[in-house]
Length: 335
Image (tube, rainbow, N blue to C red):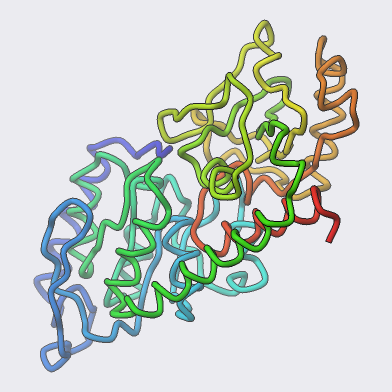
């Protein structure tokens, strides 16, 4: 899901940070003396041992799942990045995170700004920095950095590593258990809706992409016991999967959850644009102009559900997952 800066720019920045670090006290903390801070060792998802503060106070999150995760645990980071395809924090987290300083975009963190923020813990995952050891090396010059999850990985796993890094593992278990209880509650109310099929579509300009079963919205539907149509009843590669207009029928189902991230795409993750229901409504107007869209079953039955694309067609953690369950309940049960 991430598209990284050229390697040469990272290496140049790494050299600058290394020079700066020689004059700093502690572990990437500017002029802060961290020698007396109690620490503990955690192991991240890649098996790397990382010495982190016992109680991190200055946390930076560099992805939607890590931002979502720390907020769900009651921690407000001192810095974060923009949401995918957005100019600010993820739209669905704006109420909680709008005032958090931005330290770059999800695809291009600003290493210099992160260094100036003097974090004592950096949380990142494969949805932002993926397969890029030089970038992780840069971050570890600044502060202890925990790589919490892989692109396309189960949100529960990423969230577990975030909770462990913050020394809030028990609270993390409670958050997951509350989500699972909520899922069970809504599942019991779905009744005959469990016999129908459900498509998740991200519309971009004049074309569609599928949200498959490994992504958060796909996992939520699976948790709820909702079935996907044959073309979507599978996992993918950890990001939305484009559909050609010749194969538009692949987006069809009895119901369609329909969102957008403006002009964002795998190849252009920071294009910017609307993400909310109003943006989805405009995208639906664009979709109607595409031959064959208005003939789809979900459209004909008036079962295209407009949703916030930052929730349904991107990525996140437990706050996002609960929003999806709320949207399903509202759309299918009417509560």
